[in-house]
Image (cartoon, rainbow, N blue to C red; front, side, top):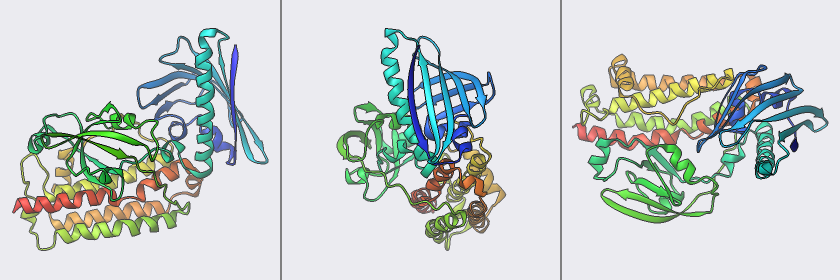
Length: 398
C-alpha cells in the first residue's frame, strides 16, 4: 500500500477538531456540500459535492478525540480505500494528521496525487473554519451580484422568453459584476463561462466553479425574446466582519433589517385590506401573500439556527420552491394588513431574540456560527428584492 499524508495544526479545541470528522453539519462546512453520517463503528458515511461527485463508506474505528478511521469509496474509483485521521494536542492547539492508504499500483498513481492535493487543500479549509469560521471555498468564490428568482412557465410567457430553462434575475446588487455588465431584473440567464444555466441553481454554481473574483466570463441570457451576450467581470467576495458576541450580532442584524421593514410598512399606508389581498392574476401572489413569504423566510431562519445549534442540519437537494398554499394559509391566519405586518415584525423579533441568547458553546463552533451570521447580516437582499414586487402588485390590483 501507498500512504498519502496531509496534516495541519489548528488553534481550536480538540473536541471541535474531532467533531469535524464525525458530525454531518461540520463535514459540510469544510469538506463537502452535503453529508450524512452515523458516527459509530460500521456506521454509514456519505459525502456529496455539487457536480455529482460523491463518496460512500462507513466508520471503521472511532476513539473519541484521538482517532477516526473510515472507508472511502468514490463513485469513480475501482475499489474502496481507507483513511485514518489522528488528533494530537500541542502548544499550537491540535495537530490533525490524515493518512489515506491506496493500493501500491501504477493505476492508482493519478488518484493518489489527487488525494494529496485535495486533502491538503481541505485541511487548510478545516483550519480556517475552526479558527475563524470562514469557509475558504466561499471566501475565494466570486460574487455575481444577482438575486435569483422563480422562473415558471407563466413567467416565461409573460416575459416573452422562448425557453423555460434558465435562471430569472429578481434583482441585482448595486456596484457588482452583473449590474456593471448591464444585466437587468427579469433577464433570464441561460449560459455562463461556456456552460449551460438551467432552472437548477446548482448549474450556476458549477458554471463558476474554479473561477475567482476578477475573472471575466461570457454571459448568455434572454431579455424578453431577444438573446444577448455580454462579458462580465466577476466581483470579489467581501467577507463580513462577524461578532462572536451573540448580543452584538443581533444588534448588527437589527440595524440592517429595520430600514427594510419600515419600507414594507410604508408601502401599505392608505391601502385597504381588500386591495392588499387581491391577486393581480390567479397564478400570482397578492401583496399580503408576498409579506407572508417574508414571514416564512424569518421562520425558516429560526429553524435553520435551531438545527445548527442542535448539530443536525436539515439535508436538502437544491434550493426548494415557494409553496403558494403556505403563504395563502398565513394570510388566512392573519387576515388583515395590520395583523400581517405585526406578524412580520414578531417573526423578525423572534429571530433577533433567538440570536441574542445563542449558547456560548455554539458561538465557539465558529464554522456553523459564522455561516449563520453571514446570512443574517445581509437580510435586506431578500426584503429589498420584494419591495418593488409589493409596490407593483398593489398598483396592478387597483
